[in-house]
Amino acid sequence: MLQLIQLRWLAAVGQVITIGFVQLVLEVDLPLLPMAAVVVALALLNLLSLLRLRLRAPVGQAELFVVLLLDVAALTVQLYLSGGVTNPFISLFLLQVTMAAVLLQIRWAWAMAAITTLCFLGLSLAHRPLVLPSALSADPFRLHLQGLLVCFILDAALLVVFVTRVSGNLRARDARLADLRRQAVEEEHIVRMGLLASGAAHELGTPLATMSVILGDWRHMPALRDSPDLQDDIEEMQVQLRRCKEIISGILLSAGEARGEAAAVTTLDAFLEGLVQEWSALRPRARISLENNLGGQVPIVADPTLKQVLFNLFNNAQEAFASRICLSAARDGATLILEVRDNGVGFAPEMLAQFGNPYRSTKARQGRGLGLFLVVNVVRKLGGRVAAHNRPEGGATVTLSLPLGSIAIERRRADAA
Image (cartoon, rainbow, N blue to C red; front, top):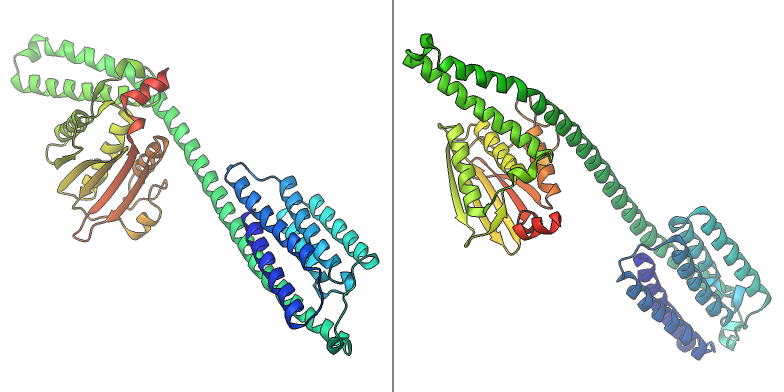
């Protein structure tokens, strides 16, 4: 519709220039008032079309056909008033048929071809003849050839402009559809992984509980109770078992099971500080810091998925041989900006070009980029976006932009209601 509006403006301006040239320079008498009324009608049609586009509703085939039909009617009236089939601009009907063939389904295109053919036949039977001045009436065929040349140039230029723009729109649409198909495949992949992870979490619950009971019994056995070293080992094993249980609980929560029991009301400051402290406790050799630039308390519901996203980014930075990791938090209106910076080796160029795609990793081991793949898709599900780049001084920065409404208490309460 927008392409048709632009072409219609060109047509209106072209008609004004042509009518003025024929009337003033060639001194051919034309019915200026009705011809000007047609140009004004085209301008009004364009204004109505622009108002129609503001509705943001899809433009259907029938609607496009009606608009093209109005263009054909305007051209037919102008040709009727200026010589009918003897007017060299009669070939502009082919432009209308071409636009219908490009934009519309085949039945609408054939209908447009039939209507323009009928208009052509009608103009051959009835039209207002042109009365040429004596200076031009001596060689009217030469004047007709000149008009044909001008019409051919106009047709060719408009076709190039229109077809290239429509082709660009079609390519953009195809690229968008391909991107949507890729996202659908990725989301299906996530669902499969989520089902597998949820099933594994349920299956692991029983053996972990059994191991916890056995370790508790061992701790009170006389043969082991008197050995401080064995007691320390048993305590460490119990700590690791509790950690395994927390991970399984997190997987189940992320899968949507028993989320209401574990949903904790907190503030964004406390959530980020606790997250950094927990990751530091799990990896005491790593140096991680928090830069809090939020400028105030933000009540939220602690989301295990967001926690896992940041853990994945921390783990990825550590695996990239980073000795320092920094989590920066700031607000930009209603958007939460989280940055994870490190001084590691950074991302390879091919990784940045396909950031977040599954099975794209420079690490030759199991996992192969699924962590970043999950980061990108979870953030996208929360309504945010992810960007990554390498730092000039070395290392990399991953930026998460999240709407605060996706984790704020008010939004969660509304979703629950």
